[in-house]
Image 1: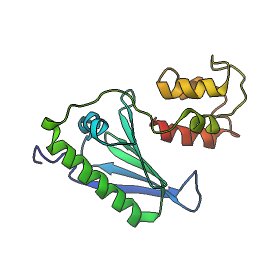
Image 2: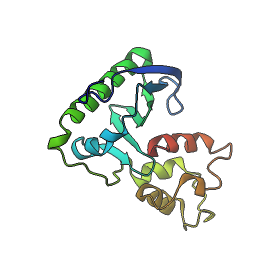
Image 3: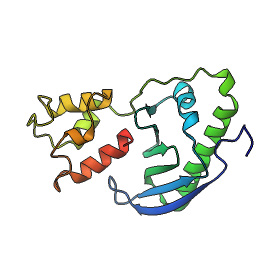
Image 4: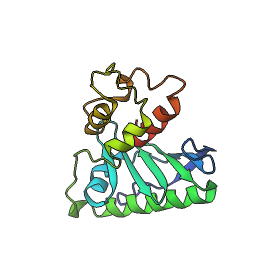
Length: 176
């Protein structure tokens, strides 16, 4: 592999029903190698990208699709089947390789950026305002979660059956 190509290939490993929209798909893909070195560069040049340096992920919203990229693969929500998933992966491959080729011209940004706001996160929480997480309200927990001051596992009710779908969706959005 050339020094100018970071992502040479990818493979779709699963196509599932989307948790957030059952008329769409959730797709899991694996990359040919570790693409995480490009994440701080993407963070510097791609608008509307969420970068989570603690979990080493980037999330991009393209149309209604939510694409989360990990060092070795991707989880894509709200895609329209295999062809759409392949198109999103080709887009990311081209983006990664283009930014990687230009990395000498780009100052990497290692700061956390959020794609979703506290209200978006709040809607996926149990909304009990019980304080069991250490925050006075679920809205306060949502804001702390997005700042990186709290972690999903600090909400003891998020994985209860009634709230598990919101927990899975929130984990996907914050790149856990």
